[in-house]
Amino acid sequence: MLAATGSARAELLIRITEGANAAIPVAVVPFAESGTMPAGDKIGSIVRSDLTMSGQFNLLAPEKMLSLPSQRSDVYFRDWRMLGQRYLLVGQVSREGDQLRARYELFDVNREQRILGETASAPASRARSLGHHISDKVYEAITGEPGVFSTRLAYVTVAGQGEDIRYRLQVSDVDGKRSKVRLESGEPILSPAWSPDGKKLAYVSFETGKPVIFVHELATGERRKVADFRGLNSAPAWSPDGKSLLMTLSRDGNAEVYKMELASGDLTRLTHHWAIDTEGSWDHSGRGIFFTSDRSGGPQIYHMERLGGEARRITFGGRYNARPRPDANGEYVYYVHQREGEFVIARTHLDNGQESIVTRTGADESPSLSPNGRLLIYATEQDGDSVLSVVSTEGGAAYSLPAAEGEVRDPAWGPITR
Image (tube, rainbow, N blue to C red; front, side, top):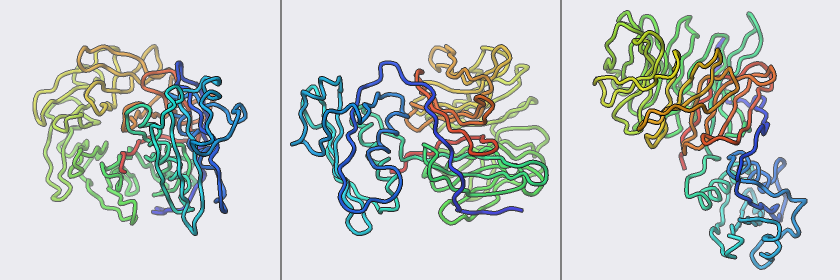
């Protein structure tokens, strides 16, 4: 049985596993409220949780606050300096009919200056979206980089056994909340990939008894079969302009990386080698690709600076390096790396070739970077649980998203669309 659906499912849980060193002290005061608030987490709680997840901030617990101001006239900066806070966020939330209206201000405590002030609104049913929006604004005001709290995750859950096994393609907030099933099947679903506008997912489904690539319109649920060739159809990856997909096909007898123009279906073969070439991913320029190949005797990462051009080997540490995921500024490529019998996520600096280990949980796979390059999500196991783990790419902070039941795998971090 196959079903495309938007029904809610059990959300992923969130578990903070490690704090960051030298995190920035920030106080988020519980927002003052007027009117009937929707059930669920308060706006201030959502912001505190988001900023904590980023790994870059140390949030002051509300019970340690000396006062609970909601506007500048109520703020005594001396108290917040005494508490060691560098930034202070205060605000008010009111309900006007079906709308929530939030007025908030962010202050530099030492300078006693307001660095951000805004009024934002959202339907009462989308209180979490309003909280994530405020988090993004606060994050950007402090760090100078865009926040990713309003982005989404796609992933696959697996529950049941034998004839009762169910594969579910799900989409949620970055904290695992508001999860919805987009596709349910008794056959495997693999490799979800977001379109640049965040409106579509490409993925591999075995619903016909073989691997086939589909493009799924999230708003309507409409699905389109785009690659159903003889043999392997796998590893879809969107081009930066959203007009084409990289994919791995074995239609000519050997696994090679192709580019498909989605409007016309035209195919261009990009790799030509007797070895297995797979897992293509666009580089930061949008003109070249990274891919995995075993042409050197085992899986390694290669870079092709222009489509169809010569491929240059990138990874040399160890005998297994696969599933490349480059960052957005062309500094690093991340990948699955085998070391001492364990699988971890590593990265190589593209200028000097230096390799470093990012994760150490030991059974790590399917890396995906946040749009700002600050966080990395991947699938792994912790204490016998199947989880998605999120770590700071600079180390020192992490949280995990265990499945409520069964397994969770193949995470894909969605784009910034605001």
